[in-house]
Amino acid sequence: MKRIQLTVAMIAIMSFSAIVGGSILTSCKSKQSIQKGSTEVAVPFAEKQYRTDKEFFRASQVGKSSDLATAKKIALANAKAELGGNIQSVIKAVTENYTNQRSVGDRQEYENQFEENARAVVIQTLNDVKIIGERAFKEKDGSITYYIAIEMSKDAVINAVSGKISNDAKLQLEFDKYRFKKVFDEEMEKFENQ
Picture (cartoon, rainbow, N blue to C red):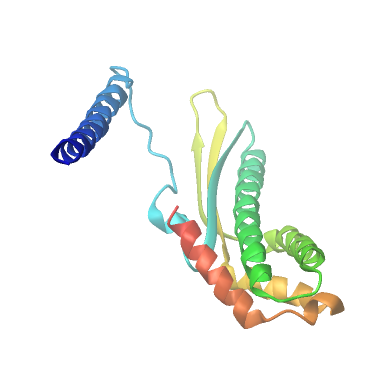
């Protein structure tokens, strides 16, 4: 019996040593991968207040062009694409969790219709984004680099989804906005903590 306990203890010690050793090697390796003379670049809108939280979806992106207006359009299009992807990711998780909590006849059909309506809402609501930060830089070659940060409130998404669902008689029978909002809040918290 002592031999088994000793073996288990040795395995635990060896595992711990391997993890600690691997961590040390990884941290040393990452420091070595930075070349001498490299300079870290500060990226505008990388701070916490520009990231998605419990109340707002947020995205920041960059665009580059020889023309200021075009650089802004590129940055805005990139930011909306990122924002839309984030919203769709949360909506998909909410849809799956919400429909799993509902006792509907044909769950798969309900989930598909629900998700289809939610996707349509995301596309429509991306026109309602608010710009929360803009910065433009003229580069040495004369081009413009444009940074933009945008946001959209979680409540605007919830209201848009529930409004779209209300227009679908079949889905509306099973829709519970309070329960949907509760699941949505839970998913927003998970998304924020990623």
